[in-house]
Length: 371
Image (cartoon, rainbow, N blue to C red; front, side, top):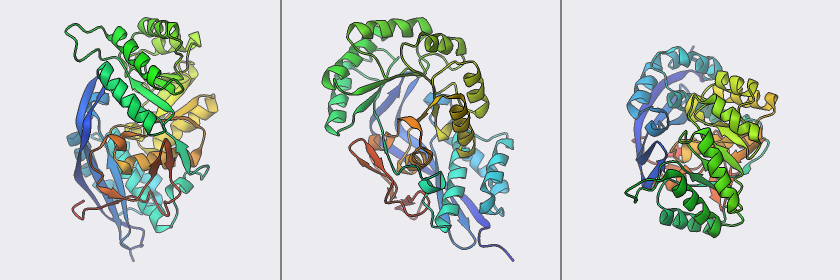
C-alpha cells in the first residue's frame, strides 16, 4: 500500500517575471527574472512549491540549466517518501547536471509539502526563534541621479539599511572611472539618508588595494560602511584576508562561499567576518551546514538571494528568522518585480519582514492554475 507521504509527481514550469527597471550588479544586468516554479504532489493530494532563481550575471547559471537539472532529478524524487527529504536532498548533487538553484527549488518543494501536511509553519520548522526580521533594500548599479532617487524611495519606505551595488562605473559617462563614480553615488545616498546603515556590495569588482582606497575616500566624507560584501574576485582569498585583517569594516564572502567546504576553508583561514548564505547557491541542506560552520567559527551570518519572487524570499526569511543569529538580512528583490504571481507568504512593513500570518509550510501558493 502506498503511503500518503509518497511523492507522486515532480513538475516544473517557467516563471518569467519582469522587473520595474533593470537590476544591475557589477557583472551584469537583469531585466526579467527567468525563474522556474517547481511543484511536488503527494499521493494524499498535498502540494509543495519551490522556486529556482538562476542569475547568470552572478554565477553563470541559466534557466535552461536549472530546468534540465530539475527534470533529471525526477528519478530521485518521484516514488520517494517526502519524510525522507534530507536523504533525497543529499542525493541531488550526485547528478552531473545539478545546479544550485535547482537544488534549492526541489528541496523547498519537498519541505513545503512536508510542513504543509504537518500544519507546521516553515519558520517554526527551522527553529521558531523569530517571526519578524529587518531587511535592507538595494540600490542597483546606475547613475548618481538614479542612486539618489532610489535612496529617496527607500527612506520613504521607512527602511534603515541601504545596500549599494558598486563596481560597474558610470553608464552615462564616455570614460568610466569606477571608483570615483562609486564614491559619488555612495555620498549622494548618504546625504539623502544620513542615519541609514550602509552596506557596500562589490560583486567581485575591486582589488584589495582599490577597496582600501575606496574606504579611505569614504572616510574623508565621514562614511564608514557597516559591511563590505565580496569586494574582490571569487578566488581571491588572500585579498579577502588582507581586507579583513585591517579591521576597517567587516568583510563578507558571497560569491566565495557556495558550499560548506568553502565556508570551512574561509573560517579556517580567517578570511572574512561574515558569510552570506543564499539558498539559490547550494540548496537548503548545504545552507544549514554553512550556518553551523559559521556559528562554530564565530563568524556572523547574512541571508541574501538572487532576483527572486515572493516564494523564494519567503523561504529565505523563514530560514533566517527561524534559526536566528543573522546579523545582516538582504531579502528585498520582490520589491523590484513588476508582478506578483502568488498569494500568501511574508509581508513587508517598512523595513520589517513579517512571517506571523504563515500557518503551514511557506504559505505561498500560485494564483494561476497554469503554474
